[in-house]
Image (cartoon, rainbow, N blue to C red; front, side, top):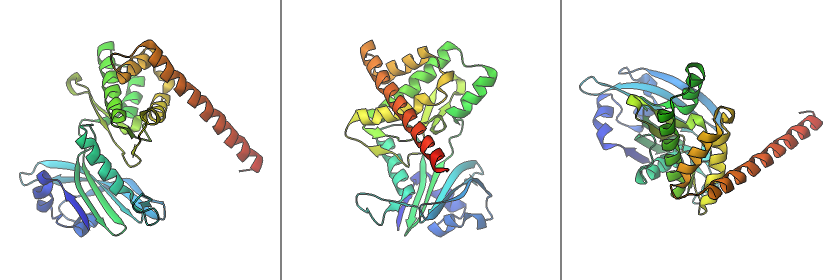
Length: 275
């Protein structure tokens, strides 16, 4: 069995009676706290996966919110195990540790356990953070931030995304719901979540085009051309000239057009087949 427990959380888990893989797996039976499903178990890849929210307490009675992800027979192929596969949470956990090594802000791992085809991943709640998608919904109602704060948000998101690609990682699902933002006291902090699909690529160009395309296309009509330009300028670095930004934007535009044509082709084929 593979097991990881963050040193600073060992006493808290022990205090709440979470002393083993079985204790955590059967957390609903624990009388010390309540669990609440935030993602009901869904069936995929021949198994199931789900997420619960738990409010723990330390020995001093202070509340500690965590998210517990459990899965069974939820496997993905790997180079080492091309046929047998490995739990998708194992891959996500390893990617979280990679981000930590490169000081790329993400979730804080508390516990990882693996037993056969069952796996558990527990992470600390991102207190004070909200998904960029939710921020946008609020801003559409109340108005977008003033220039200074808006520029700080754009620059920080661009800096973090740039750091991901500098280390040759491709998120593969970089959309607004996976970019978390804290604006406490107008200090901008960013965290990137959902690293299950993260991949290492030798070519940075392969990393950036797919990720930037999916990120920029999210609610694209609500983002001004000036803000997009600012994002690209910060992402590529202070020494970047206009030609570099235009070249990258042109490549993304071509990709978007190809995707739209491909989508229309698939829709037309489904219509012809009566699906």
